[in-house]
Length: 205
Image 1 (cartoon, rainbow, N blue to C red):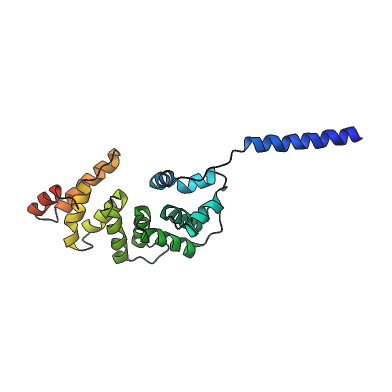
Image 2: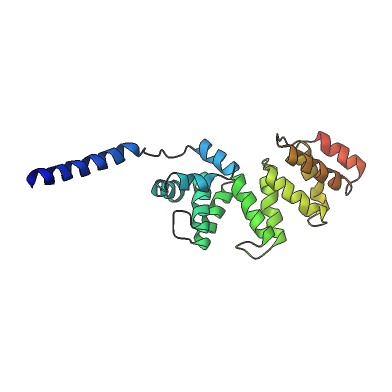
């Protein structure tokens, strides 16, 4: 009886040890790695793939350290209920904190939300404000969305040359996106004098 009990205990202990050995501790992401994940829109899926083990670390870096990349990640996790209880207002708050620190992904996302009327009520003026800031630091997604807005006749025509220059000088290896940019440049050019277009091609904003 004792021998059987001992064997059961031993087997259970070995099972726990084996399970622990198979579990690898997940390292917190560096800012560069996280920014790459955000750029590829893989940041939330990565948190899930890591079995939600980094929630407390992510929260600490967002709330206490106030690192913009982590504010963005924490905000997204809250807004969409990824590994935490869903809290849209608090999630948007952290996205805005990230945007205030100039993170282009946060600026682009808030601009997109205001444009789409997602979470916020649709507000084209606020959308343009956020998208312009994101576009100015090279966020191609923001530049493309802003171009679509401008080609519909929205926004100030005085801003069209700057965006034309930004898109003209943008770099992408994505053929589909490259074609899209070319088409948007043609549409923008149709709304501008030829001299303005030529100047925008040689001017960096």
